[in-house]
Image (cartoon, rainbow, N blue to C red; front, side, top):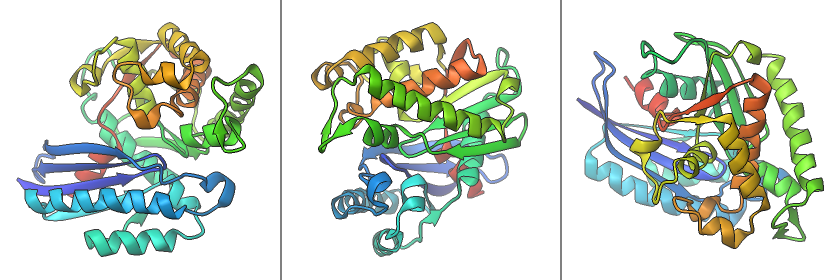
Length: 313
């Protein structure tokens, strides 16, 4: 098998997958999969620039990943950067730092490209399985943006909109540099209004009402799933392909939005880097499910990383 490394650098986290890939069959076998919260998009919505401390956190994770890639002998490395680095005026600083550490230039992809990678990664295993009707709507709730992509065997329509969990938190739940905790009804209504406008924008390109199976990706969705499953610690195998009903998503969203930082931090399986942004992320998920009329969301641990790795074939 050919060894490949895929890196996905988003607004909130940077993730690595090193895998064995059979170019003939497309079989992908994980060798190492990990995630680090770096909050690269810190302040980008307000300033339009990547903060120096956010860049250093990201470069520190890149150094760690470079050592793992070398140790496992990956022959091909593909580094994809998404929302925060698309939006930043000083993204050249980010590019230079990544090249210096990893020897590859990050591909600052468009939202549509991001959606296509996510769709491939999330649905490749679902095809042919019973209980997963087509078309699939894959929804990737990131830190800066959310991608919507509808398709059957391939992508039919895709759209990226700016309603990520970090962006919504910084835009509506921060006052004088402090998180409003817990948010009031006014702040929640403001987030909901942004989400509704973004869903209208997405629906202009993607026929959301044709969704047969809703597939949810990324940390906000997997964290909600972990809470719904009452996991005592994060368990990717238990979360992958779990099916979470809308009623449970509504219940968890209400719980997260009315809890304090300290209360959210004590939830088992909650990553410390998601404590302040999970409320906004859950609200995006709930709103999407209500808009498309989904009775449940199928949660996938395989996403853009797997799509990037398969692209190396």
